[in-house]
Length: 298
Image 1 (cartoon, helix red, strand yellow):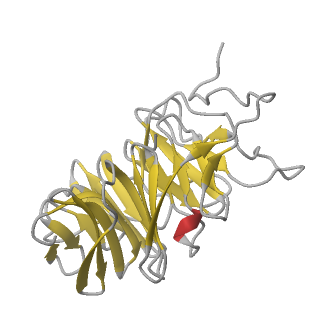
Image 2 (cartoon, helix red, strand yellow):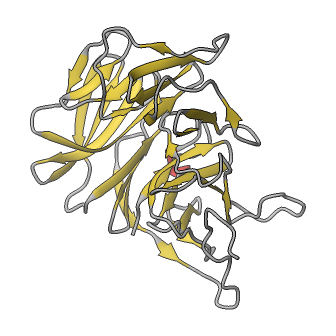
């Protein structure tokens, strides 16, 4: 089963995404078109979202703090073990909200953190309790009980309300785009680009300020919908695809769509789709780390 996809490192091939199971089971791409689980560690919480900060994948869990996972081969002397989850400390008993968008962020109450460095960096407190957030290299947007606000990445120490914006959105996707009931809201122009008729979105990601990619259903057919600049395009993904839970994409047109049942539909640059299923090759003599938890066991 799959709960979320963590995109590959910034600017990389979408096929470098990490697929995560509901309890942090990590399926890594093998570079040959397959995703394989080779480490037995997991998380005690339920994974609800994933993001990426450099070489580190970050998972948000229901009612708990975020956790970091470093994929790849073991390197002697590394502080964080490859193939193991490590707690990201934001505060005592933090019940964090993991951000969306190209920049890794998280929030705990009114506190907002950037997660793209060696350690979390606390930013200016949001104007209200944060219920959702998203960021890019340009700015961070939060949805709070006081409304939507923006914090510029450079030279700003104070959040500014987004003038004339709706009080709330379903989810900010980066500093420009937000998911709303009818489609995608441009937080600059405040114009909504509606979804194609009959399309029901299941997962959506802002790849850049000018590229948003969504996966969902049109009737019983799985579709990929792309907003590039001002042009909206749609295409079928694959027949008989299961329940869609996550999508990642890159600027070249490649994309990966994950289903809860463990399928990965992969689009290449030419627009051809292939469907694979995640597999496990766990070493029998190395049970791996126990599930990571938000507090130390007594």
